[in-house]
Length: 277
Image 1: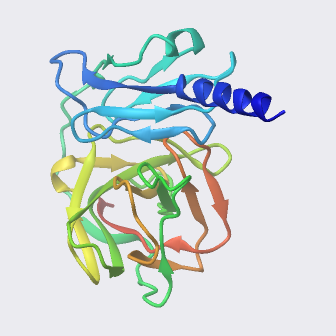
Image 2 (image 1 turned 180 degrees about the horizontal axis):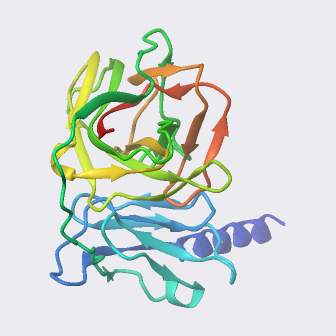
């Protein structure tokens, strides 16, 4: 019996090991690595991000004929791989094609410009909100709240802000700001960003401001504001930010996991926007 059990465990471990895939994700046009591209199984919690050099390693405990491995990065076409293809990508270079955007000239007439804040304008500094890593992996986890922009009002997003209550890490921490359309069921849908917004901060306590003027981001619909963790480890006892119990919180624990929602506890995220009347 003991021998059979040992043999079973060995087979399980070998099977598990066969589902560890690794490689590098690059730009199909110039062969440059794509930092922090997402890779994972659609709709499941098996996902991760590349490092800043495009390298990734992902453990997939099981992969069925119905599953799809997906690669994505802001500004690139998605790449989907079926079960047959997954077996052949270990150690390979995977290429993503850059998206081509229509840069049609827009003529702007002089108008009066107004400014306002969307999201949560007050920081709940007594509510310490943290990332909770899936299987001790924080990289790729996101927290989001709805901006509540009035449909039909075109806004230009000029800055992102949040408040760090506690940061006990010595080195600078790296994050990514994401903006998403509101889906049919009221959850975050696809992003309308054309290039990634990655920033570092070493703020121990206080407001963090990310200037977005040079990204030229605009939308005429409501949208979600999201903060994504790019660190491997983000222990709640060492890092937390202001979060409001008054707004719904949306969260995703892996690159291609499904968005979840809780009634309160949303991050106190906000954006500075300009608009014309």
